[in-house]
Length: 109
Image 1 (tube, rainbow, N blue to C red):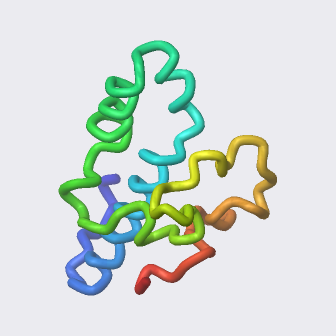
Image 2 (cartoon, rainbow, N blue to C red):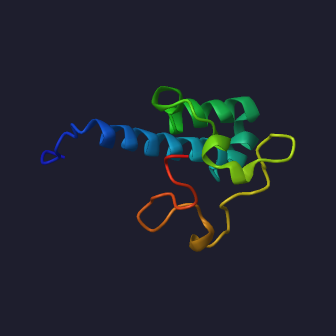
């Protein structure tokens, strides 16, 4: 960390912020631990823990919604398809590559 260089390029900073926001948005909605947290604490507290503690920063880093980033999860009624999850799926079907970069949509969407 002592050798880390501070990024000063504004476009790279914005790209990094959006990538982090996209990641947090995905995890807050589709984290595999949500079901367990929900059983232990209830739906409201589980969601609060995901959004405000585990994946904190969603509101500060951007304003796009989960469906803005991942429209393929949209149901006909405009809600998020809850049945789709990364649990048990092979690496190839996840929305990121081996480097952790999202592959299903570009960040410009």
